[in-house]
Image (cartoon, rainbow, N blue to C red; front, side, top):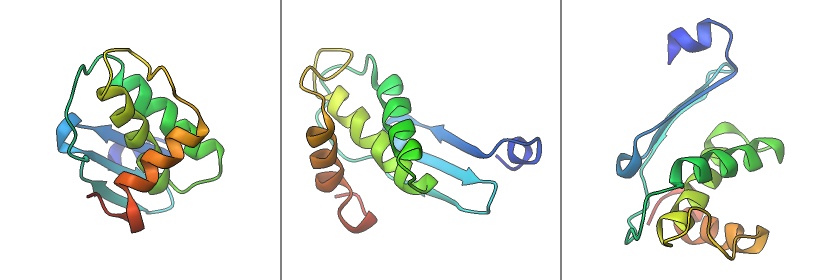
Length: 108
């Protein structure tokens, strides 16, 4: 991740499915987040869901760690459905998943 940041990238995020996420920011923020434990129905679309949730967080002014939590929350919603996008996805559902899986910055 350091090499990518050194090349000029602002943020680096590496997703590892059930193994969670590693992240680093040019400002020095780095860390990892464990993936929430959920029953997976279908993994199709989970990566795209992570990206969308992450961008939602970034565009909402969140720090990289919190943006990763939004990404993981959206991915978890997708993993629990047979659809490539959770059919009921909206801001309220995303916020509820975030609250459920990332209470005080920790996974349950």
